[in-house]
Image 1 (cartoon, one colour):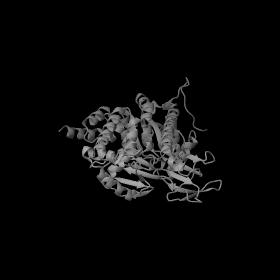
Image 2: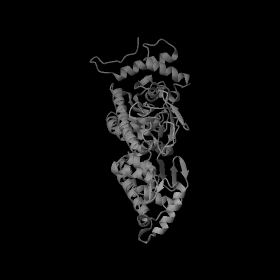
Image 3: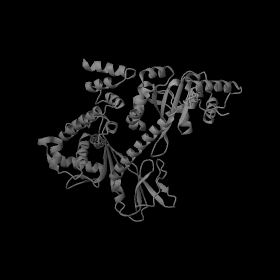
Image 4: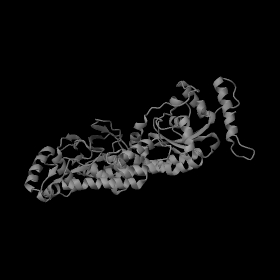
Length: 496
């Protein structure tokens, strides 16, 4: 007889009686005795995998694989960080009411986020249900998070279906979340709680929430694809009607000339310079500042494709420029010139550049000399004259921040913002833009009321000394959150 779900006489699920039967089955199976019923197939197979990994059923808690200080960085860089507001709005209020905890892992089964009722969080701490612990089957045996990652399917693990006895008083449901770009598993969403709070619909709830998260990631991917396409269409246009396509960094085709007849994806390994399509066509692979240009091998000598120029000018480090995949060494003055030209794609005169970079006392003759030296560095085909302008597809971190602020995407803005724009520059135009970016970033982060985003901002150089940010963060953080202590200590330092 296969183990079923026990109901009361009036047809209601009886978690206590069901857990009692599961415990009998668990003890009998481990002892090699005859069990009153067979465990579910997915459970018995998970037990076999876990025991083969030498998991001890009497093991107490999962391993801690990530230190507390590393968690904020892992969260901010993880793709699921983009959908955490959705996950919280969908699950946390339900978890609070039902005395559950919401958990979100990465693809390796490491818990990165946790939220829920304070009483359950305290109980979760006692059994290691906390950020930084790993919950794969080979780390802590059968559990909803580890088993959903192993099967790539939603699962519920109830009471003694957990291989480790510590969790027999818990019931958990989890579902995987996939990358809409590659289809790979990004992590798992889980609801866990005490045995008596179990509800049969838990698995459907986490499954629907995971699907909502994937949909939101798919929408963001479509938006990113469109921005990538717009920025890089000049490369495709430069082929002058010859066959070619734009591909993302993962190999997805997002534009082609001619339209149609292109595969959805090509396999592009780092360093590859040629690819053969399924129809036998061989294409040259050219790396761009972002993604790739695929084109037919040149049989003549057409005009060279438009160059791609990437500028990274925010933060305390040395300003860097990458031209067609090649690093360009820059000092401060050329970086200031490139910033001004990037902000004015239609071009500037020497007089206009002098005003932007030197103010009313600027000398156009000085600017012309600096432009001449910069043209010698990046090439006369990239820096054109009459007016001075950049004849390239230009991608800059400061404009990425500006767009994200304008579009009210604080997480993207913070991720793109390494620090103040050219912090050693006194050029009027640079100074004004630096103030605009810092003020705009601060405003959209405070406006979001996203706890993780505020915490990341408070740790960032631009927010580290911001008292209002620390006050807002302390007002939003739950009492049990381990981040409260360091944030509070930093706030005290700012007060004195």
